Image 1: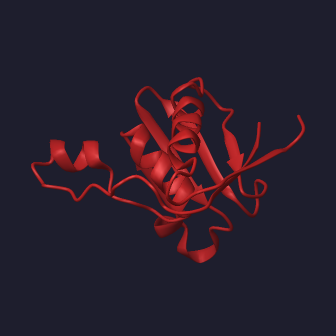
Image 2: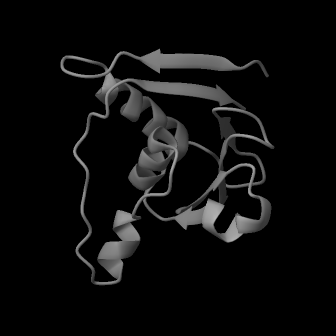
Length: 120
């Protein structure tokens, strides 16, 4: 499968919401199984998203190296998965935080210029 690179113009009157909606569509439509998506790179150097169990996504920032536990996280909120992909870092899993009785901080939409490289 070929790689498709997309970059949305962000900022005021930008397309951040369109990019976030497109990513949310991808994340929520990954079938449960062994195949996932690679963002911003490849299997060894990028952001990997897998949907191995119903309503659970694993986001892994590669290379994982010795700090694999901090570079890989399971999410129950597809919205948190989208934020992690965009921000290239782990973010609070709002669904898990709410179920745990915590009061998570939810970021506003709009992060400036957002880029996406996806290869299935």
